[in-house]
Length: 374
Image 1 (cartoon, rainbow, N blue to C red):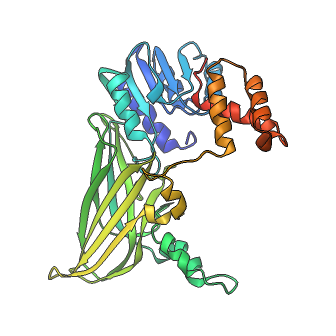
Image 2 (cartoon, rainbow, N blue to C red; image 1 turned 180 degrees about the vertical axis):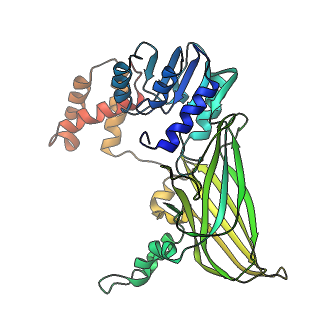
């Protein structure tokens, strides 16, 4: 992402537009700290670079190399768990996937806006508009389904098509034939958004006979006043690409046909479930085809595992679970990792005797997840 000149130029210009000398900046999902470095170069007085992964180790080295170590404070945590000594004048982030609704982007921004951004402070980006267009591209449509339809080595793989037909994917649609004009689907205004879910509708009326194979989607961003960024198929290619939502089957369309699509995204267990419902009506308004597709249907789910998440399921701990419970209890006694691991090996030899290192790994993993950071 650092190597993407389209992205980097846009974010540089946005920071330059809103930063004032000595400003406090919060860099959410800082990664290797490139936005933090740019903020310092443009005059920020203090930057808080918040990143839960070990990528921030690279950022620390880059800050030293560029002479900014005294102005950037790296914090290895989720921003949801961070409290700052002072509110930021600017919050900058690029927590998107191919589309803006990705993992915990919206909850993180809402939280940062309410707790960590100074009144009147700037958010970069300020808003994202998700846009869509119909796609005519038979090869792209067949790419995901062909192996399931044709089989391999004489094997029947057709049952697998029920999952493949509902799987969206990242694609480069710059060479695909796009049908009709782009349509706005929904807008995420980070200055006011409260809910993580979003939905919108769009439609096209056909002027000529054509076959539609799916829906293209991308975002147009307003990073700062007068500074934008887009991953639209007709824009300079950026790291994001576009999303291709395939139709379950190719849709032959006649002049006068109206294609309506409802696109929605709902945050479930830390990631988004996308739904795209498609309806084709002829020029008289008679429904010719309805498709109901969801990325949830692209993920095989074992019914036994699903049952274990129901409210009336009664869990019974395996020995590994009891070992984890004991480890957490021993952590409350402020024992070191090795001492806790030794007790686990003695208490649960059936789990750890053959490989005592597993006990230490278990304790270390639990500590990394639940222990306070020193």
